Image 1 (cartoon, rainbow, N blue to C red):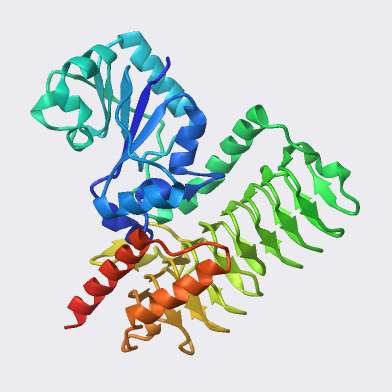
Image 2 (cartoon, helix red, strand yellow):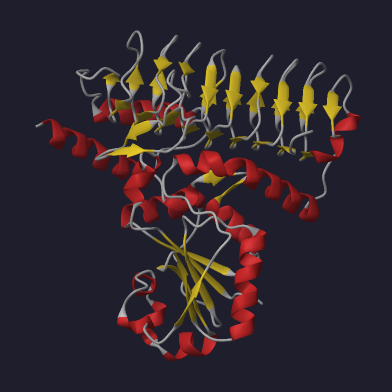
Length: 422
């Protein structure tokens, strides 16, 4: 069934996606070969996709991606909590339900509303349905007459680390989608490149692969997007996605379930990790079961632990609470614009805010607030003016500029940190 309008709205628990949520809307999280909103756009190319969330974050998102605020088009509407990951099977099943029942519906998971379908007749005759803030509040009286449908076979992100664990399955599906929709090149055309299960290695345009590289897709697909450069003797195990204009350095060891966004430089040893975009981990050192946001730079021989010596569940501290993740493996969750010095060591389940300069010897604390100058518990606060100036320099090296909307979010976080210290 054709969907005319899609509204992605942020969940109520945006703080649980710390530190990503400091500067980003939740639908920007990268899982597999797409950010969440990009996959909705890919799966619904003819739909009018709209967004509703925190005001300052929404303004930053629109400006960074060149979008404009849109109104509903004529027709029906599917509104979904953006922490519900899109998959072709899940959305196909939802479309079948909509088409079979042919009426407006509320979708629930564990009896909690997470989305709504409003048929074109209802959308056109009720003025309130044109207001995203009402649609995202699914328990109001406006929708009391709508039937409720309990969903199953879904993947929903409740915390940022859930993206790490969802990455492998998403990569496999995204490779299938890209194979269906894109003309791809063959890895066999490269000299001195060793490949396993070459049919599952998908290449975009202008991909460079140096001799001596090993691409092993025996356990999952490998997707190399446009203008990717793989330097000599790198080993990549699928499933894996490497985004546009990214570079894999000499001798890199990339294990399964990794996704690297555009303009990243990646080296050393990495497994089951997501690097959002524009971040560098290009030297030796281990990164495992981790999520790096944007404009992060890890210095040479930066390492993280992702397994406790006791093999027990890993607990992490977010901004205002401690979480028992229920996971045996979890490494580093690192916010935007944070940088580490050489030989930095992160303990298991470390969470770092934005704009940190981490240069402390020995293991760092497992929670480091934003604007830490050093990384220790008593380290001074990095001045926001200096942090912003550095961010402008770093973005300028990629021919980008720090937008006023981004700077506002950075200053908002700084003011929050200062108020806590007073």
